[in-house]
Image (cartoon, rainbow, N blue to C red; front, side, top):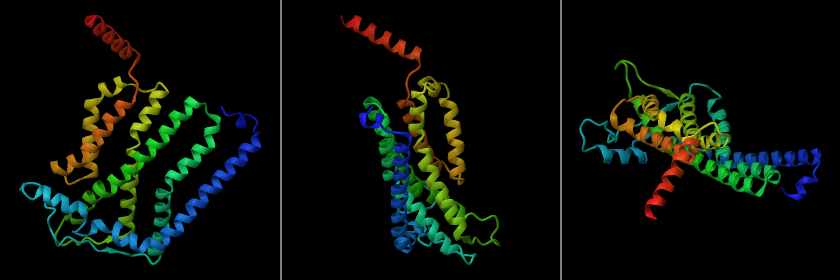
Length: 281
């Protein structure tokens, strides 16, 4: 523990916390203003991208599925969904709230750094190395999850639901609020889901989780992930199902990699290593 931290009083810590919060809020506010200025361009080029046929994912899926007849058709150049606004104040409030969420994503690494800077003086050197790695890994995985949510999960889900018709007499008119609620939900849910390896590692460090759990419930996890994938992509065809299922299953295996083995498993591994050494001798 750092000596400078040992001499700090409760009020000193409170002052540090106050400045940490002020710097974090200040950074968030600055990025909100920048996001507010750039939001019309962001909406046209990024957020509304999945509503057009030239969205990059649709072009890739068209090339991948065009040769196989029973897969969904992503080569429809006429695909386009008009987003409508039915509330007088929705566009203004969506401008504000989306600027906030964008600022939160962009400042996430800095907010993590501020948290790290506040708690690091109270940690030992060995603990600092572990926590530093945890913050870095968690930040990277969150951004990867948000990217997967935006570029893969949301477009596939949106395209299916936007083109689904219960009857030919029913015309889909998707409101701005409905579109943005689903957009933000799926993007942030995927960001949180990608924190699963980090959560597993933390539970392992606390002694609440080990590798035997993942081995024992692997079959159950496959079924659960298939159900979750089918819920996220309700089209039900094997291709889109596998597009979502494979990343989720990779997360499961990555989580299993980061946790500690059970005490019995550790003993078995040591015995195996000892036996192999004796054989070599």
